[in-house]
Length: 351
Image 1 (tube, helix red, strand yellow):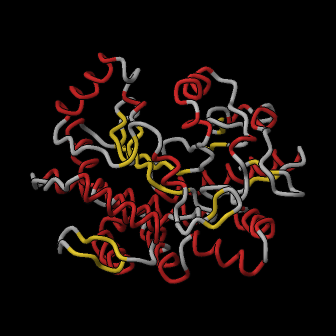
Image 2 (cartoon, rainbow, N blue to C red):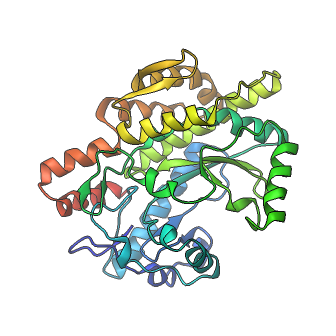
């Protein structure tokens, strides 16, 4: 979020910041749909610690550029009191086309997310990994939940970002594709029908990304603290590594019904880590923290092999001290108003 440092309102200043981005950061600092939104992206990194170092450097340098223009940067999945009606769409062809085509749906998309890409060799392996991660979407969302406020009000949800983005077409829980042939045939069918220009207009919570050679997980709320971003990235990479091993072992994946995964995702958006989620193995609700602890145990060896065990263990901080959403609710109680909350979010976003 690009903010005015006095009242912490969103500032329509992405072009101002991009104008001062040095050549060595070109392509790593980007616009998004709205002019008050700024995206940073790393290069492909060999491991999670390298990506974390790069993200820290990007946050610092972008923050410095913003401050040179009398602005500040903050990270969360929604702005607690901003109004979407007051936001301007970025003057770039793709974003103008999306806003024109989707109208009210796009204009309301004042939200902030995190995408994690994992390099994968082989098309069928990528589809298998995406299908495997699909069932973990609700738990990953619950861990990342960081948007309890919308338009100046507590929503009663830990991830208000989720229902806002849900209005878009081709979002949320993806189909279980099974093979690259099925996936590519379905994409081509949509392209021939004129529904999409290419597969990048499928904004699923997890998707193969053949142009980049990755599996991309897109379900996460944006995190305020950088170490929580790194922890979610470590969980994603370790989970993909585990699924890749199952693919090598020719382990068949049981397809979870979309309606059950989606119901679980709504539970995650509502209660975050403070409620129950459906355990697909047991076929019944279990406390979300218990499911997270089990996942951490299952991913520990994979994280060791990938060199990201320390980052993965930070998930326990989210379990012990609350997700970003719980922390925002506590900030409001401490500060007494949403501007005081935002002041604290700005401070905690710094690295």
